[in-house]
Each structure stands twice: as structure tokens, then as C-alpha cells.
Figure 1 (cartoon, one colour):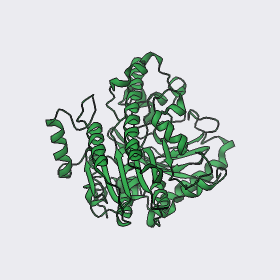
Figure 2 (cartoon, helix red, strand yellow; figure 1 turned 135 degrees about the vertical axis):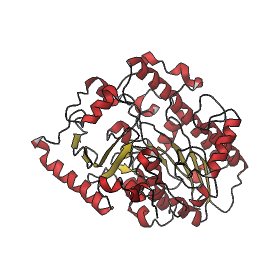
Figure 3 (cartoon, helix red, strand yellow; figure 1 turned 90 degrees about the vertical axis):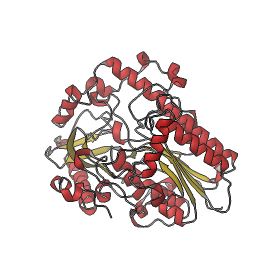
Figure 4 (cartoon, one colour; figure 1 turned 30 degrees about the vertical axis):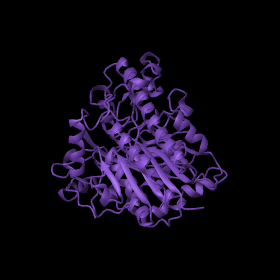
Length: 464
């Protein structure tokens, strides 16, 4: 078999369960078909619940505190980004002879051509003063001149989503398959807020028919950090009314339908070009959205499944078998690059060498030993750093700043994370074991104190 092509379809802020074959509500025929053809990872976990840190970690295979990108650009004076010196897995594909192309959002902070792409424009992101790539400035201004706003769709053809889709499809149409395999990445800013209606699908989703999560009704905030309740009851994550949640959820579904349609159009071109059978395809997102879970909206320093459990589907090239269509053991978003490299016949090295995904694809049954790690540091409304460990059935969280708090959830009995059992004597051993694993990971990967992460040295974004 010749070296496979690679197609990455990435979106922004999508919950894992918002796909038609999962919840029976979403309109995602193309993602449903992709899952039927490939493998669905039900416990894919983002390494970080915020756009920029998650994306930089995906690109480098390293957790956010190792990349020096723990916060979105500019929040609380943090200016960490990737730089032209940063090593990404895109470089590995480029060096292996792939044509590498990127269309859409990146949030990586450095020009894409310095990060391993032959073709690429950064269409979205927030940058500190003076650090915005010139290519993004030009694209944004051109988008505004054409009637778009450079970020949200709002039905305008020249927004980030539609501009990336139009230009990506145009490039693919002109692409002539040759001796070099193709690495193609489409990265949309949808369904990231501000939420709005994508009118093509508005009639499918009635606000009055939206079903709220169980934790919207039953969350008492007992056993949770005090700031969580504060934000739910009167802060920036407060839902102003039940009607607001219903409308936002319906709008969210229309944005996801737009994402699905875009993915389908790109897949269709791969098929028309005769590329699809010999292509590894990956669909995933950077993180989720609270969407009413625990009476919260959008995202922030919250460790809950709505934010960290992400959609993840992988299709293998023809001739590459997998033993299971559903992978239940947890996998980290930082494991995905290593898996893509290995599946493409490129030896993973450095941080990309630790992925267990390819072995999981060949296991007849889930591994009970799988454990992945995640973290968060701050959002614009506050600094509440934590790190944690996630198995198939348990989640442990340690807050290491001023909050000094722990959470433990038995996801097999309490999937809505309503009951913190960290002080339950029946979970004493599980708490010790997961806390030990989380702490060991933090130390092994160079995790430090919150005081250090608030130092000028770190906030100025020194990045190797």
C-alpha cells in the first residue's frame, strides 16, 4: 500500500454527544457515515478546556504547561504562543514528503508556514498586541472588506468558516494527486459562540423541544469549588433564563449541522479525486461547551465532561484493519498526532511516541489500565488552576492554586458528575491511586506552582 493521505477535520467547542448517531437529535449525516466507516472514540479527552492551549498541545504532542501556552492569548497578561522554533507533528509529515495544507482557524500564534505547512492561512485567533501574524491581519481585513467579520458566520459568505471552506475546496479541486501524499487540515471556528442561527437548519431545531442536561436540574453545588456556584448563580457563565438556554442549544445544533455539511463536502472531493480509500481521516474538536450542564454556559476553568469529553472519529485507509468500531478506553487529544504518524508509516519520536491509540485499535476488548491527563489554568474571568486524571470510570481533579480543592467522580454511577466522592471512605483507595497518578504526571512533565505561572518569566511567553 502506498503511503496514505491524511485528512483532519477539526471544529471548535463541540460536545462529544452532539452527533446524530449518539444523541438522535443532531443533524450530522456525514459524521454519522464517517463513524459507520471508521472508529468512534467515546472517551476522547481534551488535554485542556480552552481553545489556544488545547490546539498548541495537539500540534506539539505536549501538555499545555510544557508548551508554555496555558491560557488564551492575552488573558491575565499571559502571552505564550507557539513560535517558528516550535516543533509540530505537521513538520514530521512535511519532512516525510507530504504536501501539507491548512485552511481555517489555527490559534497557534505563529505563521503556519513556519509550523510545517506548505499552504496555510490563519483565519482566526486572539493575539497580544504586536504578535498577530501579518497573514492573519491581511485575511481579516480582506474578509471585512468583502462583508464578513473574520470570525463568526452570521450567514455571511466571507466569514472564517465559509472563507476557509471555499478556499479549501477550491484548492482541493485544483490539486492533482501525484507522487507525494497529501496532508490536508480543515479547521472551522464553528460551533464556537457567539451562537447564532445557521438558517438552512433552523426549522429542524425548535427551542421549545430542546432537552436540558440532568445536571441543569439537579446540581446543588455541594462538594464543588465555591467559584463554580458563584459563576452559575451570578457570574459570566450564568444562564439568564430557561428560554436563553433553549435558544442557544437550538442554535448550537444548527452550527453543528453546518460543520457536518462542510466535512461532507470535503470528503466528497477526496472521493472524487480518488483519494478517499487510501486516506486516514480524523474528526475531532479542541474542547466542548457546558451548554447548561451544572447550570453553566460556554467554557472556563471547569473540569466537567461537557467541556473535556470531545467528539473523535477516525477512519483508517483501506487494508488497515481495526478490531473494534467503538473504542471505550480514554484517549487524550495529545495522543492523536502520534497515532496519525504511526498509521502513516512515519516513526513517531519525542512527545509523539507515547500514543497507545494504534494498539487500542488492535485490541479485542478495552484496556482497563488506560488513564489520561488534563489541565486548565485560567479564563478571562478568573484564575483557578487544576490538573487531573481520567480513566474509563473515574475522574480525579486537583486544584493547585488558591482554591486548594479536590474532586473525584465515579462516572460509571454518576455520569453527570453531581456527587463528589473524594471524601467518601468507600473511594479511599481509588482516590489515592488516581491522585498519585495525576501528581506523578504533573511532576514528570515539569508542572510547577501557580506562583511560577504568574511570574513575568512565564507570562511573557518564553517558548523554545
